[in-house]
Length: 288
Image (tube, rainbow, N blue to C red; front, side, top):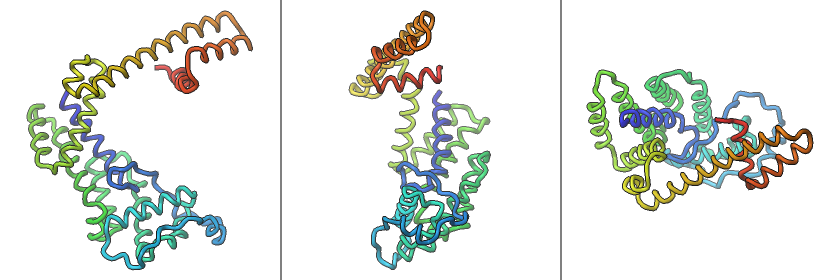
């Protein structure tokens, strides 16, 4: 079981992290990739300019040495264009960036668009290689070090764990020992991230079958109390849904037309709040 949890962790980690660069700010929520920079501009320049009601914060004309903060500034610019629905016209909006970032903005957008064309069927190792190849095509060594060094290191480490876990020539015990050794040599922050993610995976797969004492011993009294309350609420919800389905079937068998619809509406209102009725509609539309 531990082997499969670790394999899931490594697979998910690499799959998610490899594409979280687009535009991302370390571990913040990623945003949708911008596409269509080569599309023909269908609006006149003054129409586009009229929509540009917001501008980037004032910056010095000279940015100095490239830093990760400059990538963050480009990400903010992309988010602004998305909000204003101008992402397809990004090339006409670089004037909203400091002059020292306008040229590299073209490389950044071309890089992100190239990522969207990477074959989704590639293996993890091939995806990592494609990612590094594209970075080398669009950016200098200095830019790669400033913008992508931490992500690339994380990807490489995740790939190393995945290769250990997928090696069928090793016993489960050997794989576990190698993984423990690998994680032990990582920086503290990265070890904590892996351990926290592994804890969540374990909790997701096991908490329904654990009693209060087991949950408390593993995760603490406060977490155990919340989890037990959640389990109780889930059970009550399932029971109410089952009762509703039974009474709905009775109404459908005994009434027709408008009377049936009125009776069903009254039944929903009597058993569920407005918010719960939305959840009920999803459950009924996609039965398990």
